[in-house]
Image (cartoon, rainbow, N blue to C red):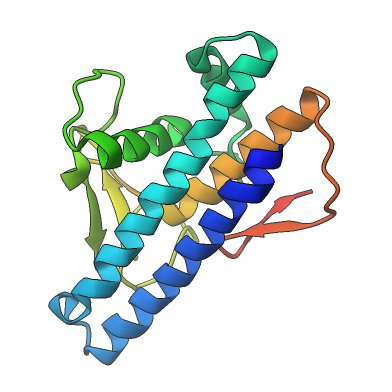
Length: 189
């Protein structure tokens, strides 16, 4: 729980600020993606850093519970909710974004992406992913899966953190915070 509170939540907050800065730069550049390249690169980097912080929970929880990280991810996956809907594939995408940032090219067939190039900044995000997920009609960081689907990182980050909060609390971890909002989405309680 301390890694989630001390590392993953601050990384998510930094990423959310970068997404807001990206939107402001995109708007100031009159919807020209090339005018906000620096902000886009920063948002991608911070999306990867929050993914690394979130995925690091699998090793820590696995060690504490004497489980393989893959077993822990399998248990966390169904707990990843956005609103009342399960965010299917969220944990796998977060893991893939973290691994792609660290290794660039991915060879694990379980990853839904091939490389760091599949983590991209796309504009606009309206009509992609789910209704009300991420920013409406704005540029944002997305994951382009091997199957052609695009998923918003702004949907995966809060869902993954909610999944981890649910998993850790179900295993006896205590949380001394009453409300947690991640990327503008309330995830706890």
